[in-house]
Image 1 (cartoon, rainbow, N blue to C red):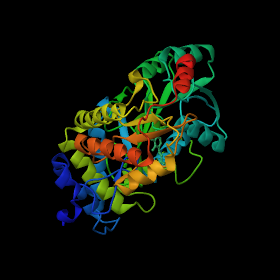
Image 2 (cartoon, protein in one colour; image 1 turned 135 degrees about the vertical axis):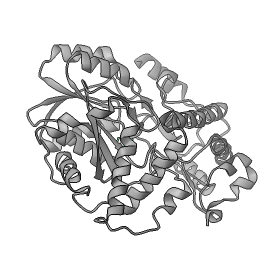
Image 3 (cartoon, rainbow, N blue to C red; image 1 turned 30 degrees about the horizontal axis):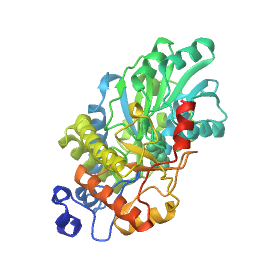
Length: 404
Ligand SMILES: *Cc1c(COP(=O)(O)O)cnc(C)c1O
């Protein structure tokens, strides 16, 4: 059956052969999630489960235990609470469950996921302030320190670890240190980073971290989880929503080893298989190393065609990379997208930035041979469009340099 998932690509690029590649006619996903997943992860879904049955309860318990075993830091102070839904459901559950209604939160914003957190608090009617220097710059610890020193009403801080809209990697250690020194609580959206990037769990400051199945863990989409401080889970309930109440979910799971409402059984079982593969790849360091190799192959290949990254080198993540749109008059994003798709690669169909750009994910069941094949495909697509140089507009680059 695995054989059906081999494409003819492997005949052309032997390096691709090491990986289970998509089925004939199925494209590689070069997107920020959902991602290309391994055959065994998909195959794990070919079975139905009774959610009340002991076997499924063991699946849930193993999943929680495996996630906790990955924590760098004070594991015993934390618990893993799975929650049905995509990453946003986990982020919203985290914000609603751990920010008291009377608190004011500092939301650090340098892209669309930071903005989304602010929107979530708008819906809940909870107070916040935002800070950031636009979508091309990281959030810095010294700025956070200054803001928290000025305003004693700010009790919680929210940060997006990797801002997937541009690929910028915020300096989490620096921000954690600043929030800790100021004696406030930190909530982290590490949906696109945990599993591949290090998160240090210091229970003096890190209240909770939201994550999902379908980014760096290479599971299929549909389940998230929040790693929360046990003391916070034993504390007061603040949730604005029944289905997103992490305290309730946690206490019910502890008592019954079951989910409060129907779990996405097939997705949970696929996630468990993905976690096993994550372990056999060497855990977080192993995954980070492969993504870094993917990213290096992507960036050097794209630069050779004239492309430039959106974010300064120092802040690039190995997870996803934003590139400026080529200035060449023959370039047309829709035709570029369609040309790549026709050749077996699906990219994110638009931009999430103010500047004309597109993003390429390095996450998922991809390796450097596949990234090189992607660059060759970009080249062929640009040739078809009549774009002989993918360099961006110099005026745009100059304007960014001045702003920064
Ligand atoms: C993917 C992602 C989310 C969740 O988005 P969904 O569309 O709900 O899966 C949240 N935060 C970040 C940083 C992400 O990359």
